[in-house]
Image (cartoon, rainbow, N blue to C red; front, side, top):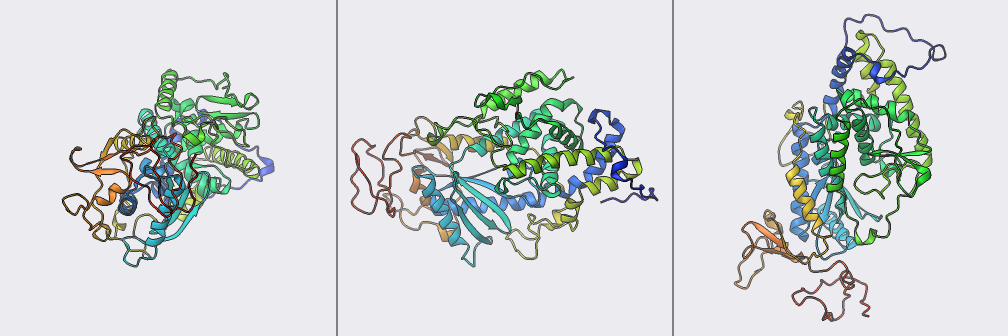
Length: 521
C-alpha cells in the first residue's frame, strides 16, 4: 500500500442525500485518469497475483497427489480450474479430477476417499493431509486439506478440462499481456473478499459463472479495456444495469427468459464501435465448438436449459445453467453488490489525482487487510507446516509475471479423459508412463511370466499395460468395457463369478468386495 504524501488534507465528507450517486459512463473517464488508477490498482494485484513460491508449492502438492493415487490405485489425476489457468487467489483451492477405466464413479470416489483417509493417519506422509470428506452429490467429490490448502477431487469429469483449454485459448487470442487472466484475478478478488458473492457451495456465484460474465464484457468492450481496474468497472457498470428479471447471459448475447427452454439471443446488442468484434466473436464460437463437452450416458436425457434466479449459459454445454447455484436471497444480494460496487468505484474515478491511491486502497480494504503481512497460505512458508522443498518464502515478492499456461499438457489431458467417453473405448491409446511410486508403495511381487519385479506393476490393475510391444516410456490403456454394456458397472458380489459369454475373452475378472449381488437377465 502506497501513501500519498502530497495530499495534506482529506476530502470533506458530503452527506449522501445532498449528492446524486456518481455512476459515470466508463468511456467518459480520460485515458490519463485511467493510467493513474490502473497504477494504483497494480499495488492490489501484486498482493493477490500468483507468485513463483505459490506456483511451485501448489505444483508440489498436485505432484504428490498424482503419485499417491497413481501408486495406490492406478488412477490418473489431472488438475483443472484456476491453478493451471494461473488465476487463483491466495486462499484458492486446488481442483483435480481422477480417471480410471472399468470402474463406476461411486467406486472410484470411494477408492480416492479411502486412500486419503489412510494417508491422513500416517505420521511419515510427505504432506500433511487432514479433514478428508466424501461429498455425495450429483458430481462425486472428495475434499481434503493438504498442507492447509483445500483440495477438491472429482471423478471422471471432463468438463473442467474442456473449460481450462477453452479459457487458455481465449486468453491467448485476446492478448494485451494476459489482460483476461489478470482481470479475472482482480474481479474474483473483489467478489470474494470485498462483496462476498463468490462461492457456489454457499448459494453464490461459481468461479466459472464469473469467468463467463467477464468473457462477455471482453467480447463487447475489448477495444476500450486497458487494465484490470477498467475491466472491473465495465463489469460492475454493465451487470448493475442488466435486466436479470427477463434476460440471461450467454457468451454470444443476452437470452430472453420468456423463450426458454429455447435459447433465443437478443438481437439488440449494445452499440459496438470495434471493427474486430465480428472476427473475435467467430473465434470464440470456434473455440466453444472445439472444446464443447459431449454428454455422458447418464446426461443424454437432461439437455434442457432450466430457468433459475440467475441465468448464465455455459458456452461449452448450453443446457447447463451456470447460475443454478444462486438462491433467491443471494440473487438480490449479488445484484445489490454489483450496483453498490459500480457506484462506489464510479465516485472514486472522479476523485482528484492526489486521492487516487488512498481511495483505490479503500475500495479493496478487505483484500489489503487479509494480505498485508506478506504471508500466503499457499507459498509453503507457514511456520505451522513444513514441506520437503524447504522454505520458499524468499520467492514471495517474485510475482509470476508470465501467466501463460501449458496448453499442450492440458489438451493432452483432455484427450486422455475423452478416451473414456468415446464411442468405441475398446481401442488402445497411449499415455506417458507414470513415474515410479515411492519405495513404500512399489509392488514387490513378480509381475510378468519371467518373475521380474516391476516398479510400475501397480498401474496395470485398471488396464494399463506397461512396456513393449508398446512404445518405450508409454502405457497402453485399453478400457475393458463398452459404454452400453449392461454388465459393465454391475457389482460382482462375493460369490462365484459366472462370466457372460458375450463379453471379451481377455477381460480380467472384476475385483471382489462389493456388496450388491448380480441379477442376470
